[in-house]
Image (cartoon, rainbow, N blue to C red; front, side, top):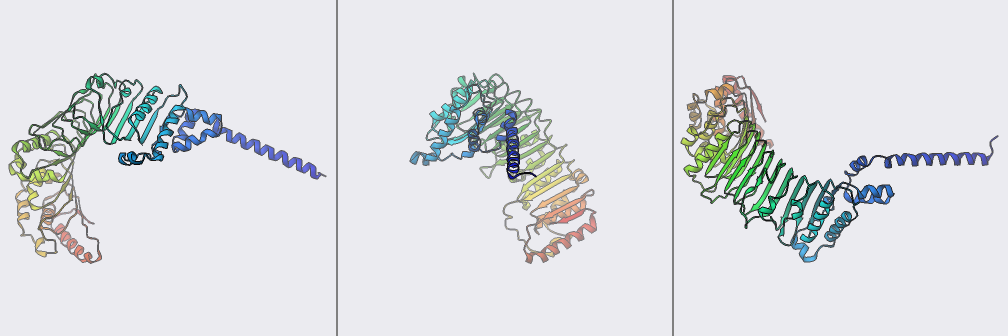
Length: 511
């Protein structure tokens, strides 16, 4: 018979075995390779990663060699005015924490990623960057707010390890070194993003973005370059280019055989009388051209691979000069190889202002399959819409999104609007039947968002149902959602279905 002391000894031995087993289980994590543990830690906030260093010497070494330092979770970016006033202790502690982390790095441990978002003095920012460069940083992502303008850190220019560099100054901005110094570096950079650059003393960047200065550059983003007037980008390796909020830009030249994506928004000087744009990009697939002032001249060449185009213009004055109308025509002709086209509201307004321009000067879009239009859809827009339909013989899908004020047109249920004899709008569309024959022979899907019982809406719907012989689906999306609108919706639905049964086999979807 087993004694009590024997039982106690047996239980104690079993407990020790379980404890030893658990310790072994815990050690399995520590025994994982550094790369695996670094990957796991990457998903934690930076302070949580730092706290793991107290677990053991093994984890302390992991922290000191951690390659991806993302300090943005500290949230220590404050505005410069507040920082000048009280120099927030939290902000200072955050900056000191960054200093401390970089100071504790193992001598030969490289930094793969350093990401900072903070209020910093220029001397501290420069010091952090120099330390990162010493550790062969590959990706440097900095958003900074300072008390005063600061100079672009020159240690960046000569770095051999840096591949990705992003510098965004929230306020007040930073200045670039002389072009001679800039052109001597950046030989390893493949991705560059600069935001809020002060260029009043050097408004021309004609010879900076070239193959000799940026032989490996694949992605370039320039935003809010104050004072920039002349920009030339000729880089053979460039694949992705974005320019934003360069309001004083007068001329832009882009030449790149590998460029696939181009985004230009809110650029060009609205008061310039000699502005121009030149684009030569045979590999370009996507162009986003939004809210840009119309330049005096446009030259778009070799956009033979274009798939998607989004186009919008900013018009300062009601009257457009002949030169600017021709410039818009040249721009549209330059993108005529695209398969999908989206036009903002101002484009339709421009196309409709001058019948000569709308009817004669546009180049056919012979590959266009999908067209999306933002328009006020007033009756004076009809010539612009008709001209677009006329030069789009292969189109099969149209999406019309009605935006803005509908002017003085009244919206009410009026049975007369649905009669076959009808308004001037319907007579206009009927007069376009012959010129739109190719367009009507291919159109399969139409979606109209913001549809209402206006004469213009109804006239176009009746025209498409009557003459769209291959039309398969018509989607009409209204904003009517209140219970008292249900009767009105049913009246519209009834009228549309009546027209459809009489002249079309298209499926009607009323939303």
